[in-house]
Every structure is written in C-alpha cells, then in structure tokens.
Length: 228
Image 1 (cartoon, rainbow, N blue to C red):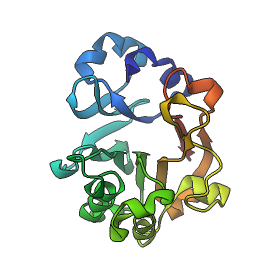
Image 2: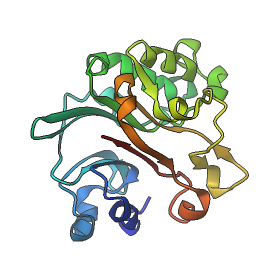
Image 3: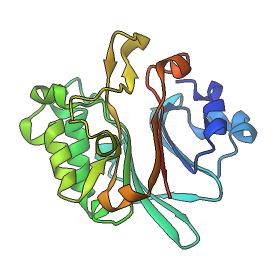
C-alpha cells in the first residue's frame, strides 16, 4: 500500500520492469510521475489505492494482451524494445468469495492453464505475489495445489529462479519473502519469479530484500532478478 511514498526503491534499482502489488492507479500516482519516471503503466483493480501495477522503464514498452477477467489480478503482458521481446504473467492472487478452495494457488494454476499458449513462449516470465507455498498443499484441491502448480509449469520448462539458484526444495525455503504483519517471527516464502529454463543461464543477479532494509515499507520483501 501507499506505493507513492516508496518510490525510492524504484529509483535505487532502476528496473526495466516493475510488478507492484497493492499499487495505486495511475491517476493517484500522477503527482509522482516526475519522480518515478516510468515509460508505460498498466494497472487493474477495484480500489484505486490497491491494485496490481506493472511499470516499464528505460525505453521498454508494455502492452496488455487478451486478459481473462476471471483471473482479474493475473495480467498477460507483452514487453518489447526494438527487436527484443518478452512475455510476462504478472501475479497477485486473491481470496475469492471467502472460499479458500477457489483462491490463491488454485486461481493461479487455473490461470496458467488458461494462458498455456503464453507458457509455450521462449521468453516467458511469471512474477509476483502468489500467496502460496507447498507447506499449505493440503488446503487446496490436490490437482491445483502449490506442488501441482510447480509440476504443471515444469511441463513447459518453466522453473522458479530462487529454487534453481539455491537448490532448495519447494516448501523448505530458507529466505522469506513475507513477514506476516511485519513480525520477524512469522516468515513465509510466497513470492516468486518463474522463468523458462533456457533463460536461467542469463540470470546474472537474483536478490530478495532483507527485513532490516525493507520492513518499514512493506511486510513483503522485494524480489529483484536481472536477465542478460
């Protein structure tokens, strides 16, 4: 929330693409345009202060592809500059109708099945807040739980950057991405960047923000990945 007061994170890392959950819409952020200096901005949400925002910088362009509103906060995006082209599924899973069995990882897995045409792309990136981990597999239908989602993505040769780099197993992550209610005693790993396996060799930098540096801004730690 209140991303308008946290733009220094963007300026510090100078990203090409930013995926921001609980982000204000463009109208609310307009007074910060000169500070953030983004190129394009795609946003969806029902609350102008709390949606999913995707920003591009450094002359990169983004466009929203055919979006299925059933998966409102999972956005299919084309990223391009000159002859370079990537595809992105930006993720922020939600609780749907107070029904845990239709929410979070279930929503993500069903969305990925719907967008399987994008999963076949060679330059596909999936990034965001999944609100999911293998430790909660028994809280979702087994065909749509976290382990099933990871297995489904692997069928398209799409893997988690974190797990490939650390060689840690799903559900046994040592570095949290969330400190629930900003409590250091309640760490969870629920934010991910998945990419096509062939892109792994181009990952030159991967970093999860540290509690001491970012907890004042959010209970979620920022994830950074550079592909060259």
